[in-house]
Structures are given as C-alpha cells and as structure tokens.
Image 1: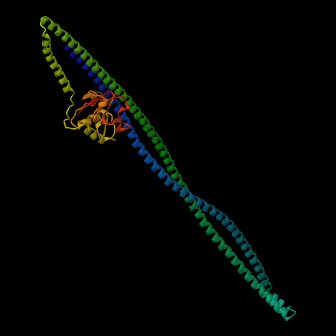
Image 2 (image 1 turned 60 degrees about the vertical axis):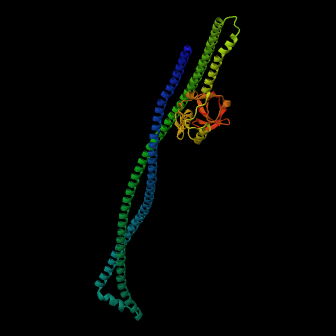
Image 3 (image 1 turned 90 degrees about the vertical axis):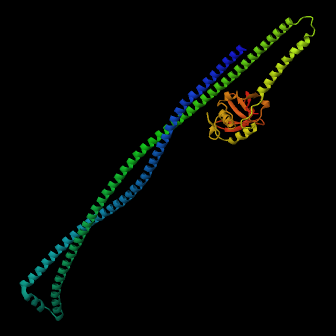
Length: 458
C-alpha cells in the first residue's frame, strides 16, 4: 500500500511538472509575439496617420495647382490679346509713317507751288509796273470792237483774280497739309505712347506668368516630394502588415504547438493515471490474494481436523468479509454519486445560459463571454456563473468532475477532445468557443475524436 502511494505520488509530480512546463512555454511565447506585433501595429498606425496627412497635402497642392493654372491661362489669354493689339498698333504706326511721309511730300510740293505762283505773280506785277498804264490803255485802244474791248478788260481782271485765287488756294492747301501733318504727328505720338504702354504691359504679364510658372514648378516639386513620402508610407504600411501577418502566423504556429503540447501532456497524464490505477489495482488484487491465502492457511492451522462444524464457523467468519465487501461497495457508490450544484442548477440550466453567448468572438486566452473567450475560458466562465471554480485549461478540465461514456452524456457535460473542450447540449450537439473564424458556435459533438466526457453536476 505504501509503495502504491509513493508510485502515485511520483506519477502526479511528473504530470504536474509536464503541465507546468507546457503552461510556461505558452505564456513565455505570448509576450514576445505580442511585443513585436504591437510594435508593428503602432508603426502601421503612425504610417497611416502620416499617409493621411501627406494625402491631404497632395490634395491641397493639386487644388492650388488647378487654381494657379487657371490664373496662368487667364494671363496667357490676356497676353495673347495684348500681343495682337501690339501687332495691330505696329501696323498702324507703319501706316502712320507712310501717311506722314506723304504729307511731308505734299507739303513740300505745296510750298514749291506757292513759291512758283508767287514768282509768276511778281513778274506780272513787275511787268505791269514797268510798262505802267500805257500797256493797259494800249490793250484797250487796240480793240477792234466793243466786244473786243470788253473782252480785253475782262481778261485783265480775270488775270488779277486768278492770281489772287490761286494764291489763296495754295495758301489754303499749304495750311491743310500743315494741319494734316500736325494731326498725323500727334496721332503718331499717341500711338507710340500706347505702344510703350503695351510693351510695359507685355513685360508685366510675362513677369507675372514667369512668377506663376515658377510657383507651379515649386508646386510640382512639392507634389513630387509628397508623392515620394506617400509611396514611402505606403511601403511602410505594407511592411508592417507583413510583419503583423508573420507575427500572427507565428502566434498561430506557437498556439498550435502549445495545443499539441497540451494534448500530449493530457494524453501523457491520462496514460500515467491509467497506468498508475492499473498498477494500484494489480497490487491491491495481489495483496488481497496474498492476505486471503494467509488467512486460509491460518484458519486451517488453528481449526482441529475432527471438528466438522468448522464450516459453520467459516460461514460465520465469512459474514464479516461479506460485510466488508458491502462496505466497500457502499464506499464505491458514494464516490460515484454526482456532486450537488452550489446553486441548485441542472445541466440544462447550464446549456440554456451558455447558448445566450452564441455569436460572440473567440479570443485566445480570453474568459469574457461577451468580449471573447477561448474554449476552456468559455467552459470555465459558464460554470463560474453557477458557482463552480474550474481551471482555465482544456487539459486540466479533462480531469474535473467524474467521467462518463459518450453514450451516457447529458446536457452540461464537458466533451473533451485533444486540446479542446465544449459543453454537451444533447441530441449530439455541442456549444463552445470554436475558433477565431467562427467564435462561439454550435456543431456536431462527434466532429472530432472524443477522448473524455466529464460530468460536473447531475
């Protein structure tokens, strides 16, 4: 009996050590993964914030560029109109030069004609003065008739009038030419001034266009820099996303490794417990057989041979043995009796409560029925509602309560798989925190190999 206790004690220590190593390995991996993943998420968040700022800057620059391009287009249109006006004015100035040149020529001709006319008139006056009135009288007296006389008088008068008229005409023509030239020169001066103004406007417009184009070039440079920054932030986000995916993959692999280790530890614990129980049973049976044999030998030595009633004595002595057997059976029955719920709830009550949380998320290591729990955390939290304290481990829960067969499973029993647990609903269905993809859900109980069914309450 002492050896059996020592063996069980050593086996329990080995199981506890194995489970402790598994738990430590799981918990030691989580902070490292969480740290790298958290850093990547922080870096991604910062890059996204910077990218948003840069995109806003790009939009602002693009808007300013569009407005500036409108201004440049307006200035270009104004400059084109101005250049057209300058060309027209230049043509008008060229024509004005021609007209001024022609006016100068006309004025020169008018002056010459005036001088010629003046010279001819002076000669006639001189001739008449030198000859006196005799020439006039001779001309009159030489008339052959009255008509001829009148004609001669009219001729002399006409000559004088013609000279006066021609002189006035040439004076008037000369003045008109002078006035025209003055007007042309004034117009030329105005057009030259206008031309200077146009050139000044042209220079100003070209300067404004140049400045705005320089600003546009600066916007282009800013936009190019912003686009480079945006590309860099996008690359950073992609890199951090890859890091996050890698870390999540590592977490998944580590979690699967931990689950495998937990399953292996649970299987090892189950094997060790089974082997310990079998060894204890064998040792107990062997001791019982040895004790029975010793008792029989002692009874045979102490009982006289001639006395036949020894069988009755034997029968009498067997009564305590029967009583002992009955006592053992009673003890066995007491140990297999179901525990009484602290709140008086039934397994159906447990299922009714658990199904309220279907659809809520699965969270590794979580125990919240609303915000997220893993498989053992879900079972632990559901039973905690009814006053039971279960461990947060699928392997440890596989040893809670008492074991029953799947054929005997009732609502509220814990269905144990390799590295996973759920609550039996009845009708071949289970409810539990299945995975991060499905969350808390229901499914067939036999979707995987069942390794144990544990009953917590009757």
